[in-house]
Image (spheres, rainbow, N blue to C red):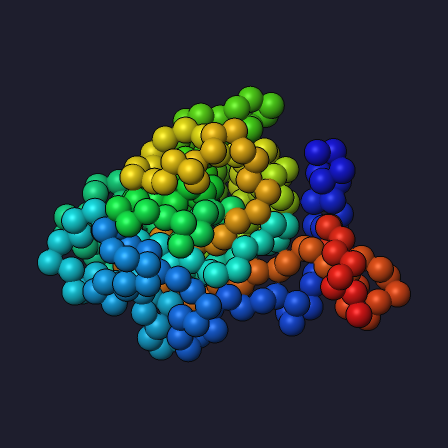
Length: 276
């Protein structure tokens, strides 16, 4: 744990990665490389064209829904990651779908260390994962973004197992349809850090399976107490329209031999097989 905390500090202090090092998970043209799972529907049944690409944006829309009807959806990148920085740039737009729950107004999320779309049961509502919750502010009051929610999971905060479902970050409130950049620094089953527009707003450790707030799952997948070392990344559909203009990841696993041409100073976990 101490070594990884030091690694996170070093990562912040090293020169910024070249833009070419970021992997664009969303290519701006189509949904190649992604799987869709909507509650009550089979894998890759993108019911109502919920997830779509228009004008170079990944859009979540409900114009073909008569009512939301608890059709919670997630779109999963097909490759798992373990040590990485995931970044999205998002904005909430329009009005919530009819019948959406009150808590889902201007609400979405980035699911990290998630189970795969293929391992979800047909009627399962949320994947077992750690959620970086994305919220938009209303006309009044404070409503931070990049909060923590834990569907089927727990984390440790200040040395204590955190079993409450959600915890607010210390971010400011973002109102209207402005673009916001949220990042999550994820170091295996050790450290997770939430960052909003460059500012660290929340940090916790030891993500693991446990707890509730996920229904109709396959019991073989929910192994309570199991450390979440790696997993998939997903974006949510929870009844409010949202746009993503960027979904990118910086893989922190790679060749750590300084003599290799593909060595990067920001790598925190060595994989000699990647050296060339």
